[in-house]
Image 1: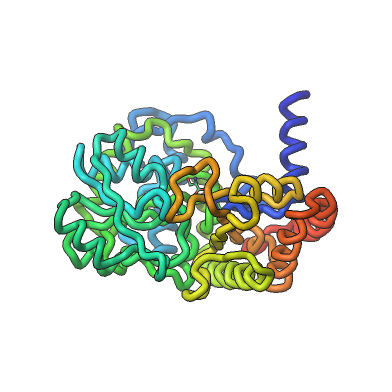
Image 2: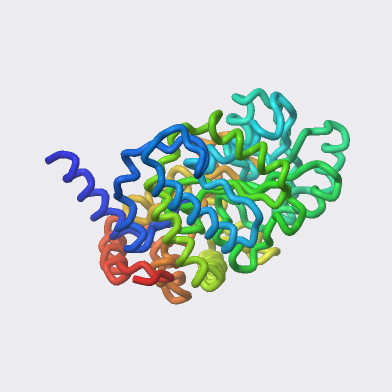
Length: 395
Ligand code: DSN
């Protein structure tokens, strides 16, 4: 049976790979068990208690439970769990805040997500890129403030897909321009040491729910601002989603219960592992970026691999060794198809219980895999066989 065979091949491959894609993660066994349920066949347009359909009483109960948990775990006044992805959360937010306005973001090659640029343009926005400071590996605050003063955008989107150090939410917010923080990558890290953008002055936080926050694929909007949240909530439906894939809310709620208990511990272990991997690669001669700043304060590590054949070559060679990561643009690049860099995320391997020794071993495997990928693949498979249980969960 073809479909079952394809799934079997996928599961066999990725459960015996070192998965380092920074935007992925795995759910606990309990979250997986509740993922397939009757809600996946159902509609519940509208909001709990005010639906356009009958048969939604338990959908209401589930959505309200997930929403209340989000508010409790992230200490926030409002949560919209209906966006079905981070991009959908961004679309709801951008569309609600302004039609055909001006939006500034950190720049695609400096890490901004495509929805901040191409997505925003589809919604009619004119987009601007903030200047980036390569020494601090962050937004150039003085340059950004000048650009904002000159162009008067309607809002700024901080947060990014290549994200090593917290963006200057406070400084930009204090200039008076509203900040939307895209926490797709760092949502789970807010439960550790990574600053909470809403406490730093951002008006809205958008995120996906499946990266450092290890839940089902989906999106969320969080805010403490009554008026802004109301506008966004009333945009998600009916403008951006009709059916919001209710079945995933069961796994979302389970993951929120897990992160209420282990979120801080998991976030800290993840960042520690990213630093260890960065240091180990650096010691092996890899050009890990932002050395002066200690390489990273997130789950990510970025490496300039031009001296090893470029991002495309390195990512494809490592894949032959079952080491899965992605090529990535670095701030000086303009070609996403063959960029200078690779991006590494350690959140998934951390969730499987890996720590310092394992990170050092992964660096060594990566180093050898570039020369002998097929040989290293056998080692990777044997290594990964030992890490099959999802931690930071009640299972
Ligand atoms: N493209 C994803 C990433 O890998 O960062 C986010 O949507």
